[in-house]
Length: 497
Ligand code: SF4
Image (cartoon, rainbow, N blue to C red; front, side):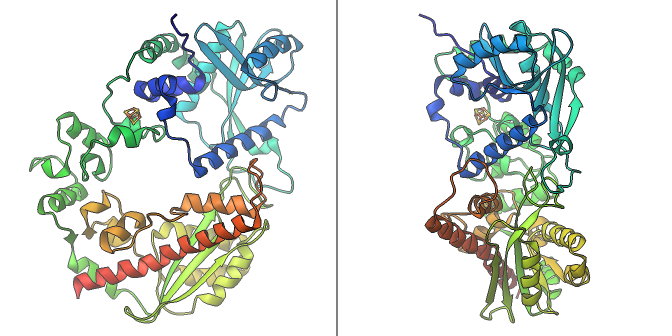
């Protein structure tokens, strides 16, 4: 007997990104890697945002908490006659199935769809998302009048309890939805045909592997590429796709004279010569600007859709940790200081108090990617005016170690087109972030929120031992960022003296 394939909203969106991804979702979902801790935590943040949006309709009925999908479908059709706002109402017709975040009674017999998103801006994929919902509800006989998107309002400032009326900004997207609506029928038919195939379709890798989301099958689909492949070319991926379509996979195989930009040309030079590019003059200029003692400095911050403290906006960066390594001479023994907030209170003032004690009055402050540290410091100066003069004196001492790499004054093929510290450190030293429990800034912020205990995402509260383990990993990670910078600078010095 032929199996019945159901295209749900998430499958429809997967199919829009790539039909091969859809095929795996329908036929071999066990081969799609599970999302990691960070992705799960961010997903839960989305659910939390949805809960706040529901508060806007106090008389609403939540169907998401009733039984299984079958029961939810039955209950939805029963409750439609009550003409009350419905949360997670579901519908199905033929081979399609969808749920709506919020369905609000409009005129006598129609409904409005409100889709809640934790982003601050309307994105193209949101339109497709809501179009598919409207398509399903229309097919199931539920007439839709208007479609809205409720995004997070990044101008909202928390004052006491969260005010859901101010936290969201609602946009009428009915016209945009109508535009894409006409294409859905044909797309669903195409998706059903592809999903019914016996084996996964042959689809070329390309831009769709990263847009609108990084596809979880990327490691599997991209594993055939050589180490220094054309998708590592700096900048837009259009060039890479063009080369790939011509059968050129390795950067070293790009023909001379091919239309590349300045940085891509350096990548080609390095690949062909099999050695790094070192612009000694520019690197020397950078080194000569430094004034000892050197303070290698790094912040860790978190930002949440729902502001945690009074006076804070959605997604405002809240620094909770820093690390400083101090060096009196390039080969000297570094001194180390760090700060990691404890508990659920706003950590910023205590962090500033400590930082002021630990950063001396003279010497360069070396960061990696200055716009981040400078931005956070400027925001702190606005919130804590008593510190603003001192912060201004800090800002003018900042030197950005990213620049020699961002400008490709140093480039090694193993950086894979990136000047991020995670790629530069193993390229220029024998150190790397590999194998660390916490190995990037996003993970650091998520783990901090997990242990600080004031962000209710449904994660169970970790035991004391777990909290200690995470704190040690956070300290190690942030210390690696600043300790690693010392090694990077020493390696640069070695190249030019
Ligand atoms: S990695 Fe790319 S080609 Fe492979 S399934 Fe995902 S989007 Fe499609």
